[in-house]
Image (cartoon, rainbow, N blue to C red; front, side):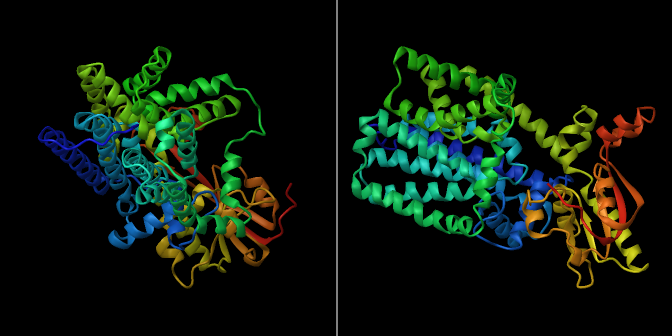
Length: 521
């Protein structure tokens, strides 16, 4: 049998307790860091918060799980940054416990403990625990799907477990479409393993497919009624219409995986699996995990070669990959390599948590650039609102428009009290192109109806001339400059353009009247 069930023994209790206490303690620390952190929402997080104000079965660029999650957490904890983010470490805690259960079932309880530790101390997971993104729920539901799949291999043809596989994969798809890699992995496993095929029959396969379709159907219907917006955006991210064949991008992506999964785990995963395949020493359990791990790594590496790829696009590989790395290190009796590798990643986790709670430490270490996108948005919003209130006394304004989706999202969140007032002008976005490229442009474009007298916020002054050309009358009325690092004050002699780029966020405020946009291509 591919994944024989293991019967808990007294020897299992110690690693089980250690895994539980380790995960609970780490999660408590991460939650505390969120509530102690002064860092602001990254604009994508603000966008997800904005989506959560209007629940739906889909959104322009992502499936709905992220919005549903934030709706739940903010109902419990309010609209603070910590409340928006607090589900992230909870998702990762569930994932770690699920991986313990998978490792215990496939290889034994100590492997389960090691798998939970490898996953929890991944640099990518540490980062993901401090922000709210689609990766946290994706990895959580993938781990539950893998646990159900492993259990099904032991308890063959179970309708309940088959339905659980389908339902959890459906929830993973509602989190991020990268869950498709798991479907590829299951297909690959069925092709390569006779044991895997024996675990299924028509009834169990039907139960899995039915559960998957039922869970995913609302999002499919939403996409069908919205021009397949999310699917189209996901496909556009591939950027296959640009310059093809970029070996440098591929090498960069591979190098970034050392930072996502961790140096030792990634080397063990790639090198160890390669050796096992060459020597034909893969166990049935190894083969199953390889089938779940390989598709995202291979597909995204090819994607990076053909065009580009973000470092986290292959994150789904490291659910099964964490268990496999733990199993290989313990099989090779490389306990101290495992301990050493985890110690390095634990030290990195401490550094990141320190930056989260005390950002000035990152400044002192010369790493301000790593956190600057989580700074300055509230101050920028306050400056825009002050100007809007001033203009309200001088003839009023019909709208506040921005030229950047990041700025739209940040103003929506940090200006929520102002824009929630009945007398507040609407927040809209000026369109650079003829078609919408994001959720803000699709739902809140600047039109002639709101264009009588508009306060436009041009981020970094990159499109000011184009914006001014879209109005019958327009003038620049103010420049807002927000300091992103206190350390920058010590460099007054730095070249202005370099100083602003590294240390400040600027916006030009434009007052435009009679909006008459030029034709866009």
